Image (cartoon, rainbow, N blue to C red; front, side):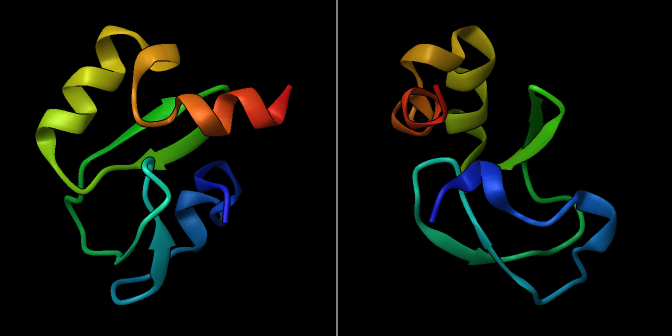
Length: 70
């Protein structure tokens, strides 16, 4: 599943399964690492992944999903 295809942030509830930027799955909890990309919320397993994304989304673990969207 593409991490850019999660439901809108206001429709996700604690415990809902979401796709992380690297394509893995986790359960949503308030405060989970997230960022915005092209108007969509992207979730991260680790703070380090979010930092990497914020430096350059096209070279982060989200890069494959970004490429697939084009």
